[in-house]
Image (cartoon, rainbow, N blue to C red; front, side, top):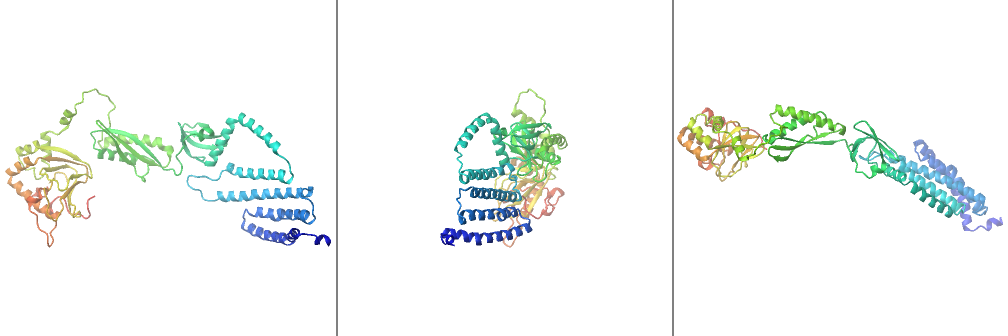
Length: 520
């Protein structure tokens, strides 16, 4: 009784804790453990360790040291402290495992992998080393300075002897932790390209396109620039550069290359293949063909199949490829341009394609042909700028075009092979000048205004037809309203026509019918 009265405040608090607090904590831990067991949680094991081992050991140590009054340095107290430290270390490792497994259960982020096992060994090792250090230095009062010195000298000798090996292990640790690639990924670094088989602490095994297994040290991989063709997704672009003859219009060459790309097995429709002009150099034109695939391993086959299809498509679509033969000749670009230009007789034949001009005699046709020259326009080009003063006559020899007003793009006139058109000299005050747009690749014959005027002055029927057509075209591009007026032919200039090919001068007989929507 006297010994109990001699207890101080700290001793009484310890006794109350042993009598009331610890049993309460054990009951609470038991309830929590049961709930976690029903849920199948991994936290059940660390909670069980705390309830069944840690709390009883803490109670026993408190009873021995605080209540009985034994020294903390006594053998029994140190044994109990050692047991408590071991249980606490095991509990900490179980909690670490719970958090690691929870992290692995989360959804993967594209381009990343799960937490590697090697990376999780580091915190486990640190926890274990800290527990051992605390056990020897704090619990048992063992001086480890001599041991650390000996370990330091030994580790220096070992590190110098195993420098390359340790470097490989460190590189393997970094690769396994960073995960620049996973087994099954197709990668490239330096001149080596292949699929990753597996990766360990020292090296990575890669199977190349020849089917050979290449073992690469991780130190080499960690210092190299790695291209991963399977992360973050399998989509890959294949670019093929090739040349075609300069004489091919770019639109024809692009259409031919796109047809070959779409017909190549493995090429995706979305994203669609694209062709870019990268070189303009007579006698060759350079193009880059961009095709998308989902499996990089088929890239060589796609390039091979595409090259074969280009040859067939070039023959079917009449787009000549460069000749592999080498000829030595004197290059005279001026004379070549003259030789390539159509002759007067060929221009006469093209002019005869116009129903309005086909009735002219040979002398008038020759006069027009001698004052004419050919031109080409790409699809989407503005063939005649609005508002530009120009009195020449244009014959659409091949292709389709469209005349429309900027103010009313829903009203337009479609031109095709053999149609004539021209440029407005000046427009009415209430209407913007019309625009002539190439709907496809177009070849035209441009006839000088003076020669056209001379021929028209000798053919009154042709002049009357042109005047009637100018008025009808003007009405179609500028429909009448309450305050509208008909613009005089001389203020509109020549808009062109083939409507009078059948002898009818009304706008409704024109080749271009009104359609809904504006040209693009």
